[in-house]
Figure 1 (tube, helix red, strand yellow):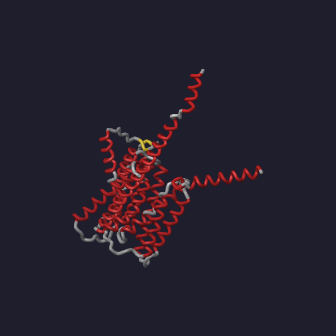
Figure 2: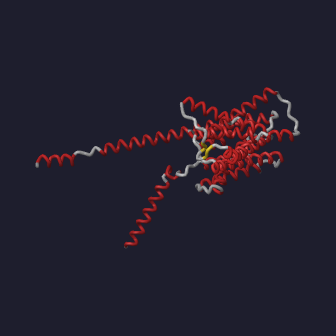
Figure 3: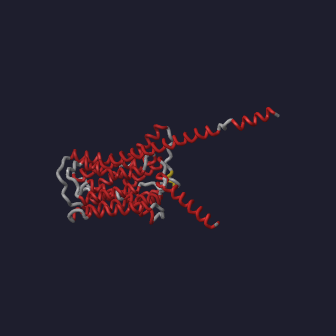
Amino acid sequence: MERESMKILSAKVTPAPTSSLTINETEEIEDTEQAILWCGCGRFLLSVIISATLWGSGTHTASNAVKCGWDPVFLAWICSVTSILATIFCRIIMCGRGEQINSCKLGPHSVTAALVIKRILPICSLSLLANSLYFLALDNQRTSEVVALFSCNKAFSYLLSWTILRDQFLGTRVVAVICCMAGVVMMSHAESHEEDTQNNEILTLSAAAVTASNEVLFRLLIGRLSCQESATFLGLCSVCSSLFLWWVPLLVYLQKTAEVPEVSTALSMEYLCVTVIIFSLFQFLEKIGSHFLNTAGESVGVYLGVAVTAAMDQQSEFPSAGKLMGMSAIGIGTMLVIIPENWQEYLGIEQVHQDDILEDTKSKTSLSTV
């Protein structure tokens, strides 16, 4: 009996080993959370840098290609056809890893001729229209202003997803849309109302609106895709452009009467090839790289392409106050768009709000008991 009582007392006195285990577990959890946070920040910064470089340099070379005499619609069609380069690049990576290739599915849909005509062809047509409008706007307008106005497409997509897809989003997204609209108005009325400038601004905003419509239509008709399915989608878009939309640049060429400026053929071909390669890489980043990088960083990178194009164009003239205020408002709207839905948890506002609610309920219950 004495031995049993001593064992019981020793068991009560000795500390439980579970406390040390829980402390170690909490430390490991905190370390993993910090590692995940730093990894997310690294992915965000990497996506910002890559997208800003690609979009800014692609806009610069596309502007030079248009000024060299290449038709914007033909340039957009070539970029759409060569999207199969992203598919080939993805297939090469998958074969190098030894992964099994299955190109018969696009989400829940099987790849058939009816799927290509009913779902992929409308998306491909809108993409061709958006790129054509964007390249048309580069003819007589600064590339930095075109990039700034085009970056409003993310705000437009939130509005369309709210009205068409019935998505719910935060109040900060509404403020982001308001900031983007205010920036557009400031940039439109900053300088003299020249007809060419107004037409180019309308073309740029139309390209942004069509791009937003294309994004919402993709979510409506196709849905979420895996990395392999995204590569298949880009290949099918290239097939649709080459088989069903070849008549668009031909019709524009037959109706074109403007004189082509005299430039070097080798220089114009260089601008064309570089533009096609850069936009193919951007399509690869947008559709396939989004599975590995941060999509919010891509939106910020498109806006930061303003600085890249200004540096590549060597724009020594500082923009006017109205233009600068408009670009700043669009930048604020772009930053507000990428705010996560659980941003209150990062700042601790939600927890404080819950504590206040608990204190109010306790006070009310105490008063009711009295």
